[in-house]
Length: 104
Image 1 (cartoon, helix red, strand yellow):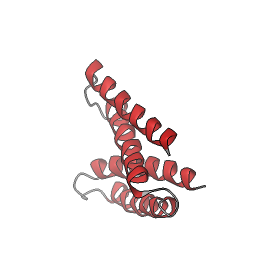
Image 2 (cartoon, rainbow, N blue to C red):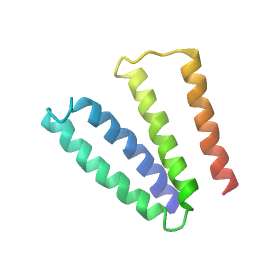
Image 3 (cartoon, rainbow, N blue to C red):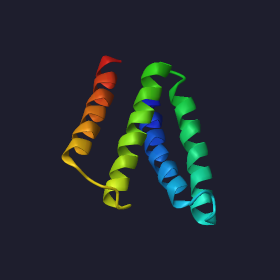
Image 4 (cartoon, rainbow, N blue to C red):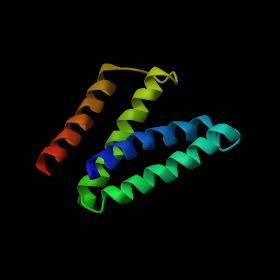
């Protein structure tokens, strides 16, 4: 169950990071509310996951999921540039996430 909390929390990190960008410095109410709600849920889920998953492994995986997810959203929906190098770097992060899970 801890791993489910961790993955969902990582996906929620993607949501809050995207909402933060869309809030335009907290000047837009709807994205600001989404940011606050998803941030609280993401942190809460991370806290639950870290009850049984070591903090180094759990935090690294949580950040990795959030970073990759946010970068993909940026490239696909928010008009950020896409390059082969960027995609390869994201694949390295995914490989690290998988490796940490396999080593746990």
